[in-house]
Image 1 (tube, helix red, strand yellow):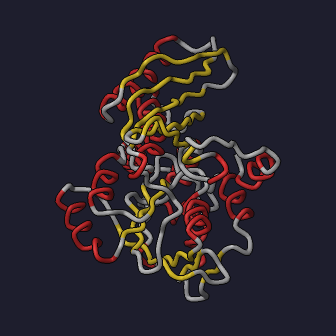
Image 2 (cartoon, rainbow, N blue to C red):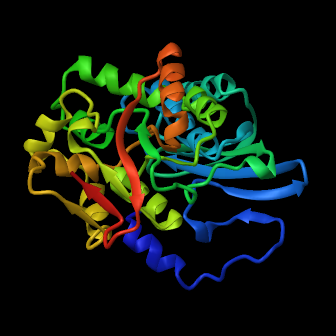
Image 3 (cartoon, rainbow, N blue to C red):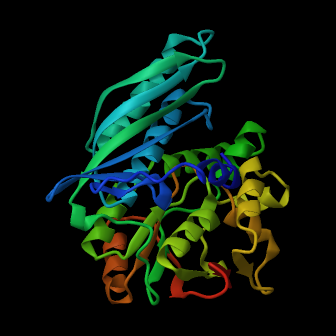
Length: 326
């Protein structure tokens, strides 16, 4: 859903009041957090969507990885998953079997267990999961604690929205399809574990609102400005060229509209990059604000683990814009 429409729909919904509700929907964070005891908090999220690739098993993996990502972004450990299915009765049952198998395999890889779910008949196939995780109440990672001087890291390339749109239009090679599927299936688990080990300031996963939208949420919640280095923003091979051909998803324009007057792009930045900044991601990487004192060791550990990462910017004191692209 477009961020502007969602914000409009939620603005009149009263904030939940409960002393044990540590993170609620009003905070625009990745998941809700409810305190169970002084040592334990429950972290909950849900995500589902229609197929973005043709292979049912891969779709199941991607959808599950995408849902799990919110738990990892909060510094939590996933425990259980409930499947959510909308399925056309005209489709073979094997398609659903393959989707559920893909989702189950990815959830098990994350260290969680599928405990059930809910299904309905629908004209359009949709799949996802509601994930519950746990975290110590004092160790929650939110999007609201980035500090001036922190370095900003991104753990996956941008461009999944453009590439998956190109897949639907038969405009992309099998090599690129395989590459983007592999990236979307990759869990953010190890990157999350390493950011916690290195005393992360703040984090969020980059999904449907794109780098700019989720970056804005971090900047706004933290009362800082994020400065992104245009030349350091990593892109999936072929995404820039497809954007030049105007092969972009509808969500890109929704994301750009929502960000009006919230950002500035320097004149020196190549205009061809702009659609990628607003590109809605599926199972995207983590945007991590890391204290400079921890950054070098963090990079070393990411490299040792074989994890993709790029320092794409820094956190600055709050200015008249939430995001600067330079």
